[in-house]
Image (cartoon, rainbow, N blue to C red; front, side, top):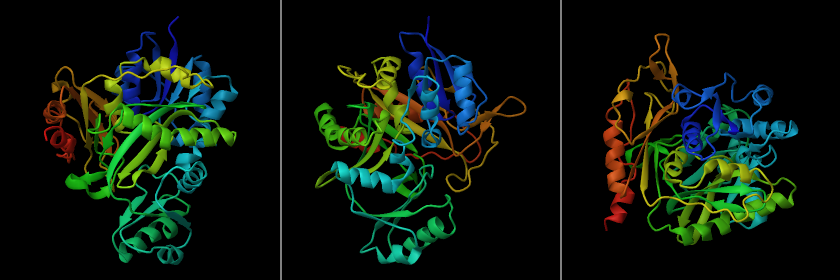
Length: 424
């Protein structure tokens, strides 16, 4: 009998997961809660909110699913994996205790320190004056301690900007109550590396790079991510293995020692500095939009891998195989994003996108007349594969130009550095 899999989430990452799971030789029956119109073309949707822990567990139980794959960070930090495990349901995703790696920047720093993982010098503060006094030089990085949908980071170039950020985080509480972690500003090239973890070992996936700022040239405020590409020039298999041994495996070992083994995917945002790799942040789930660029290149069976990672030591002997092709993912964002995303704008041109292009829905819904409309900041992801980064990039941008909606935002420089570096 074909396995039944429930994917939790409603964004582009979850759509990419559903697509990759659909390629499994096991031919699974796929469900997604709550999903979106695009995911609805590839899986059966269940009307359960991502933050409804009890409701999601009830749905998984009622549907008699064989595996639950949790996409977003919110249900992980809220303890959905624990609730599912308590009901005897196999789940891919860390426990609430292990998910603190993403739920608290301060906790992540403390674990890194205990595990001897290289990272930026830091200090946690809980008041504006104390925060300003803790800053030795500029630029400096200020991070809200809790969840902030990828928007709780400010790189302040002077005292006025630092004060404004501290006041927003600590006094205005734009993301709720919480402390602020102040970090030295690292210089270098950023790298995203995800690793599948079975509580004992970390198995690295293909590297990727993403683009956090809203505008070309890495200008403007931080977003959840405006595009990505994979692989990364100069970061081959040997280098990936070395980085995983330096920044992923020690965390898996440390959490196991603490009695909170990590099962799921551990995302490391890394700065490749002159002194070697240093961790910027950990996420406890598939990165978005890196997943949309990494999974289309995966040749191994994702279902078998996720099922193995859910078991203690289940990844022993496992191997990840990726294609030689390049993937470029573009994010089409709504007007006003990230500050005040416009919603309800009709999307046109989806049917014009050619064969071989993967369009994943990130923030869409059906309007009253049945049309697909915007429903969030990041609306769609357009991913193309190619033999070179240039061919993948050209195909992705050509496809993206077929899709339009009022105020659409699209960076024009995604993967340009990969094109330049591979043509040198």
